[in-house]
Structure formats: C-alpha cells, structure tokens
Length: 467
Image (cartoon, rainbow, N blue to C red; front, top):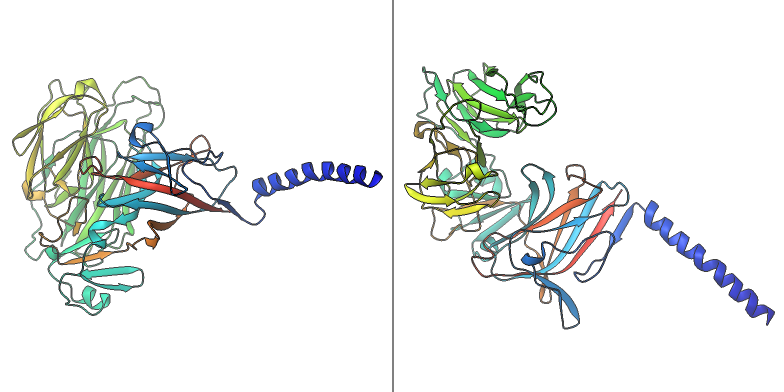
C-alpha cells in the first residue's frame, strides 16, 4: 500500500514538472526551431483562422481530412510569435484547378499595404508544354527550342518583345539605338501624393530632376523627402535629401512650395530607377526634368489640390496595362474616369475597382484627383516620355499562347504532388515582415478567383520558426 501511495505522490510531482518542462521548451525553444503542424479546423494560440469569413467557406471534413475553400480575394491570417525568430518556413497543402496564379506572402508595408508574395502555383506555366531548362535557380521556357542553356539565352538574347518574366529579373540591359538627349526642359504638372518609383533613360547627358512639393501637415511628425537613384544592377549611385518644413504638428497648414534637386552627371548609358521616399503628407506638385523618357512603376497616387489650386484640372496619363485597379479614400474623390474614352465609375470610397482594357497604349483621364491607380505596365504623363524599360510580366490574365511571348524566364518551382494534394514550401526572413501588435500578417492572393468561379482549397499550413 505504501508503495502505491509513494507512486501516486511521485506521479503528482512529475506531472507539473513535466508540464513546466514542456512549456519552457515551447517558450525558450532551446533547439532553435519551433514547429507548428496546423490543420485549418484547429484552434491555435500561434495562428488565426483564415479571414475574412465571407471570403472563405466553412471547414469541411472529407475522407477523414479537414479542408477549407478560399472563394474570394484576398484572404489573410495572423501569426503570433511568442519570441523573436529570424526565419519562417511554410509548408502549404492545397488544391487548385482554376485560379491561374496563386501567391502567398507576408506584409512588408503599410499605407498602402504591400506583401512579399511568393508563387504557390502558376497554372499558366505549369500547363505549358514548352521546352524547359533549369540552371542556378532560374528556369527558361521556350516555345520553340532555340537555346541549349540559359547562359546562351542571356549572351545572345532574342527580341525583347518575345521575352516575359515571372518572379525573375531579366539581366539583359535595354538600349534605345535611336535615342537622343533632350535640349528642352519638360515640366510634369501633376499632384503626386507620397512615395513613388520611376525609371528614366540616360545617354550622354546629366540625370537632372527638380521636384517641387508641399508638406501638407495633415499628420504629425517629420516629413523628409529622399530621392535615390539605382543603376541597372540595382545598386544606388546617387541620392538627394530635403528635411522637414519645420512644422511637426497635425494642423493641416500646408507649407510653401519647396524644392528637391537631383543632378547626377557622368552616368553611363542605361535605364535608371528613381525611388522617391516620402510620407503621405508630401504632395509633389511639379517635376521639372531634361530627360526624354520617364515612366512611373506599378502605381500613381494622384493627390487632391486643396491648398494649391482653387479649381482642379483633369490629369491624363498613358499606360499599356490591360488591368487597372483604382480607388479613392474620400467621398470627395468619387468620380468617373475615362479609359480610352470609356467611362469607368469610382462610385464609392474605400473600394478597389478593377477595369479591363484593350491591349496597346491608352489614355486615362482623371477629372478630380484624390485617387490611387495600380497598373501592370508603366505610366507616363506624355506619350513622348513613354517607354518599356522591362520585359512583359506574366499576369493571371496573360494569354501566353496567343501573344508574342516565345520565352519565359522565371524562378518559379512547381509544387510537388502528394496524392490529391499539392504541396508548396517557402522560407521568409522575418526582418522585413512587419510585426504589429506582436503579430505577423500573411495573405493568399488569388486574383480572378471570383470572375472564374474558382476555389483554392487549403488543408494544412505547417510552419517551422527558427531563431
């Protein structure tokens, strides 16, 4: 009897010690690696359910496996790390038959939100029967077998118009043989709000820009303006900086017109990227330049003109993008824009409106400003300034077989097949991913899912977090 009492006492002592040991292992992670096996129906302190609820179906159980269907775009979830980790590895089990491109990634920017998106699956590439060459992490797909290696492809490149990329850089420099420097100062009179990215072309001339801007002081804090120039290898070659106007209050008293001058002589011929780093308090009112070619990348934020001009004027720009996404954040920004003369309504604030357009260069007319435009190809504020510095990118709506595309360069690796499921793996550095309220935000990007009536079914989101 005494033996059994002692045994029970020992067990009672060992249970809390075992729990304490387990919890300390979970918290301190002495192995350096914290592993989470997560099925979509599981409740977890470390990962939330997919949200919002109206973009996903409820989890269902089939063949003794739980899964959940994504039915609208985008869907996100939050991760809750309990200590610092430097690497985040994911293993995602999913099914997809209809959505052309599905991507996954963590939030790396706010206002507006931006994500480091990685390809979960690209059916446009997977369904091609083209010849495939893989070398040093790059894959070249060829409609007709013209090259035996990627090195040969890069040393003797085909027509630029025949090349497309997906999640890859094209390291073949663009040269415009008929390009001649301008002798005239050009002025782009448009209100651009906050940070922007642009590319220009330089040949036997000084890279020269004068940015006229105002600090609107609608938010508290300092608002410096920085312009950085990058060469074709992505290395910074010059920069210019202007400090805050001295008003750090949120008093909505705009500054006078201020200027940031960027002048870089002696640059070799080529395409240069200009990154304008500025808060949403900064409104660029004019850009004065001697450059013949200047295009803006990915998006432009056409600002309001309160405190600058009594009456707004219509802003026009040109783009070859076949998909334009447009939104306004204010009721005053509700308006009808024209895309190649066709009226497209931005009927309410805080809703992203998507418009499809015909191929080719087209004019977009914005009557009132206060609007954000997201595109897939560059934007120019005059037809003479337009050029295409980069090869075409594969988009969800790209009709590869019926286009001029004959070659695709990509870093994409198709997911492996496990029975009825696809499995894709990723690794992220945690440093760029924004930690807000002790949480990371990750998203599934599934453009065209509603248009095509498709579903992406998720079974498991397994993770390893490493210190």
